Amino acid sequence: MELSKYSFGVGDRFSHQGEAQLRAILKANQAGVDVSPVWNKSNREHGIVKTKPADVRAEADAAVKALGWDKPYFVDADHINLTTVAPFVEASDFFTLDVAAFIGNESSKEAIERFLTSCEKYKGGLQIPGIAEPIQVNDELLIAIAVKFLAATEQAASIYQYLVEKKGKGNFITEVSMDEVESPQTPVDLFFILKMLADKGVPAQTIAPKFTGRFNKGVDYVGDLKQFAKEFEEDVLVIDYAVKEFGLPADLKLSVHSGSDKFSIYPIMADIIKKHDKGLHVKTAGTTWLEEVIGLAMAGGEALEAAKEVYASALSRKDELCGPYADVIDIDDALLPSAEEVNGWSGEQFANTLRHIPGHADYNPSFRQLVHVGYKVAAEMGERYYSLLEKNADVVGACVEENIYERHLKRLFNL
Ligand SMILES: [Zn+2]
Image 1 (spheres, helix red, strand yellow):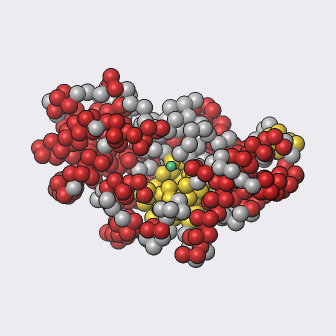
Image 2 (cartoon, helix red, strand yellow):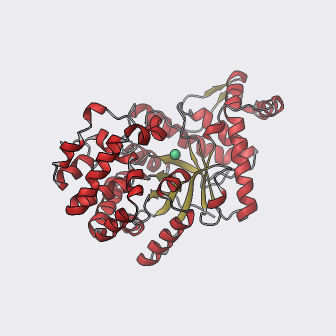
């Protein structure tokens, strides 16, 4: 199974926006960019929203049927591991093997020795075509990389083997992710991680490293844009070389887990993939949930009331809701308006505060991040929330579509 050169991951916590998301992808295709939709949902999201992997499959199939989409599309079991993968096997054809938790786990002395021996030819100045400076590779560096990543790549191989047994070789897309960690993987780390994956027979088609800088949920990239550009370009070149050197799948490409809206790095990535004529997968998730809340606020009446309740409740349960996301949010408490203040807002003011328009006078990233992690509150509203989504499907769907097309796809693909 091959993934298209360009693919875009959409998450949909409450499974009602599949068509709106696909309309945005269709627009990009009509504008001349072949980009495939991938519906992704993690085990954590399923647990909080009380959905099942089969619901994502049903949503994707229904959207595809309704809009007559006749190109490839995928359903991604996002951030699974050996203990969580089983319920995803049937419904998914794209698996994100999350091995971040295994980084730094112990490997046997023999495994490290074997790796060192197999890397002899790369010692000295490793020249990656396109990268000006040769990379200095010595035993010290190789041992450090082995200690960090051998166990994690071994784990990727175990999950991959499990999937081959269940689904058959070649019947699914394999992504390996290491993005949910503190310290970034450098381009030279990536080179040897890809070697390890190839050695262990994992035909990765996308790889999601942790890039330099902060990828907070729902808001823009925080970090050094120049450094990001340098690293991203080197990663692209490393992958190109690794594909040839290690015999990895020719469609192997970077996967950027955007944590929703990394608008300032989109044009940088666009330029680099264009310059080197390379593919890209970008994964978003919570950005659609936030558009649902924006749409409900704009719809007014009981829908606006519900949006305000989501905020008030999220504010009073801030620590509980932020806990699981502590590493990937930066909320400034002083910038969070009180529930009373928000209760006095119009739908428009609520929407403008939440909507991610950089530079807009009302936009408040702290407010946005808190609502981002507040989807549990909507999940607890149950039927009431779903019926509001259904009653206001037109206004909510328009927000979802506009967000994915205007703010994401246009920036990513220079449309
Ligand atoms: Zn991720």
